[in-house]
Amino acid sequence: MPTVLVVNSGSSSFKYQLIDVETERTLASGLVERIGDATGAAEHRSYLPDAAGATTPPIEERWVIERAIPDHTAGFRVMLDAFAEHGPSLDEHAPIAVGHRVVHGGKRFFEPTVVTDLVKINIEDISELAPLHNPANLQGINAAQVAFPDVPHVAVFDTAFHQTIPAAAYTYAIDAELAAKHRVRRYGFHGTSHKFVSEAAAAFLDRPLGELKQIVFHLGNGASACAIDGGRSVDTSMGMTPLEGLVMGTRSGDLDPAVLFHLHRKAGLGFDELDTLLNRRSGLLGLSGTGDMRDVTESASKGDEAAQLALDVTVHRLRHYLGAYLAVLGGLDVVVFTAGVGENAPLIRAGAVQGLEGLGIILDEDRNAERARGIRVISTDDSPVTVLVVPTNEELEIARQTVAALA
Image (cartoon, rainbow, N blue to C red; front, side):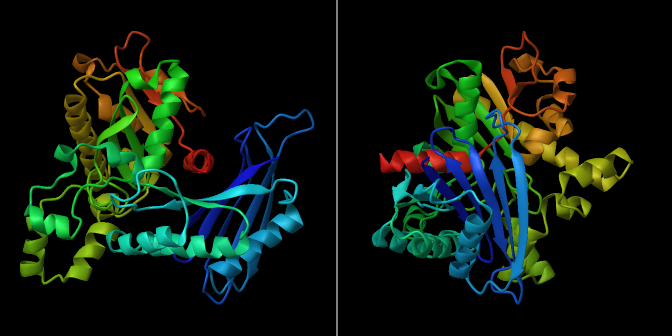
């Protein structure tokens, strides 16, 4: 049974999934973390069909291991031990490839790419655009190549889906020569998620992807909006980095650049402090004291004014981008909500589209409030624009793109 191993590597951890190529079912998943600490940890889960062969819901078996994990190479040995001891067997479910999430592909990588020495050099060169992510992704690639030396490795880039954005949308209005020299432009992120859910929405509606104008909201701790015309990204809210755009868990999103000059001059904040402020101490956390949407919503329901303001700012930003992208697309067929907040926060979904009946978006309050899994319609039957909740599956998308790259 051929499989693809999908790896998402961070600087001190990595996640993995083993996915059956034919059924697209996850056979196992895991997390190796605290790499480099005195005591590391690993969690491995295997998913097995029941006796009748059903795959949903799977029978889950879970193991937790604690031991020293000095580096990523040692982490992959721990992962291999978990497969050997607890299954599924990698002999019976041998990976035909390893697919790697790489955050930033710059403008060099616009499709899934088989990893070579030259590709790794380019990923490293682009690291100046994503210093917190690309070096860690590269660590995972190197370690995985040691663990799986005889199969191809494929890099799947978060930015690749947005390479179809036109110059008018990706160009910042600053000195052109300076921007070109330092690669300053909009790149966009969450591309694997936006691609997956937009295609899943078309399949669910049984309509050709090429005919649909969609706005997708990927709302999690990181959040982004994407305008998709006929399956192609034509605009997105994140920019040169994942900081621009929507309000996020700890990130500010859109901000007047002069705020940074003001805080430097008046508050004495240096570059590193400003970086920390905007990336780690802003967003929901900065406005309400917590970066978790569930906590913000609960506090707001109890009359917490700061939490309510955080919700109001979040929803206002969503509506801002919805209106802008409707204009960019010149019409709209589908609005999609996905990721942790998008899939599980009916209050945020309702706020984003409330009062937009004049634009053809009519929400069904009962459908929106229903707690359910899987793809579902939350607009009324007579709404000209269909509003969907579509669970994302970035690992499956990476596996699909890995197989496509091999073909």
